Image 1 (cartoon, rainbow, N blue to C red):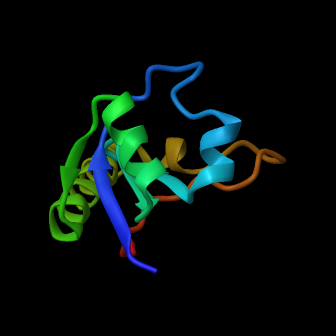
Image 2 (tube, rainbow, N blue to C red):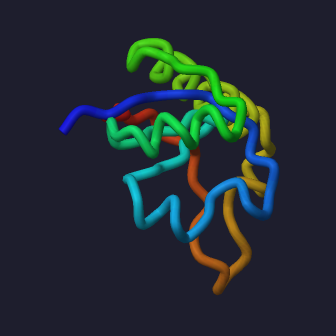
Length: 100
């Protein structure tokens, strides 16, 4: 099934409802990029949240840009801050990935 891509600012409560999750696939990514299943209810959601439609290439560029910003910030950290305290999991540099 095809997907549709958009940007929309998460406004908090009610931005994504349980009904939305039931009616169509929805996934958020860095840069306020959202991927939705190509269904009429998903298009209605984009309109409801004042989203802006994007192509996959445009959406990928936004995600990549945000990840590169996070990587640059990570690279500037002192080495001591890159290691998490003992018992608090791992702290990792952001990694690029492909949205689909």
